[in-house]
Length: 162
Ligand code: SF4
Ligand code: SF4
Image (spheres, helix red, strand yellow):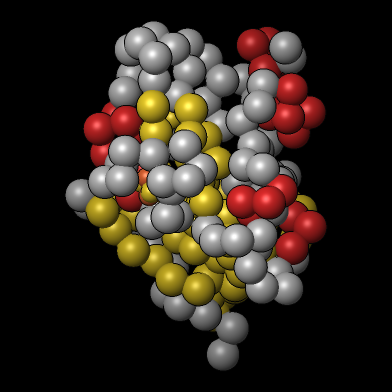
């Protein structure tokens, strides 16, 4: 797996490891994507999820999502110390992607952003739908082209849309 050398997981690796939600689930409601491939001693996401939708067999094993329990609330996005969790909503014609956001202050609704991939490369432009915090950690939901849901994992604010 190349992510062990590069530190950046690829879409192919996410698929191979079974870390992506099913196509059926993606079209129904917002759902978390757990991009946490390493067996590490962390269970913040497990304890943070109010719906017990994230499970680990042991403290060291990889977290798994119970799609039937996840409601896409995004609490785990803000709580994950590894910034490895995202929420994707594909119910409309476009993608709503909820991401961790480390900067302060966060962008306001309507702000225009550059959409960045896992390596920080610009892959498009989007718009902030909302910014919110949980336990003092920010998360941002952005509107992006639907086909970008697997690629957009960070944003850079470029200005207001009005
Ligand atoms: S999005 Fe909400 S319901 Fe889904 S796994 Fe995260 S905390 Fe749990
Ligand atoms: S909180 Fe984040 S880093 Fe920790 S196990 Fe869960 S997904 Fe991985």
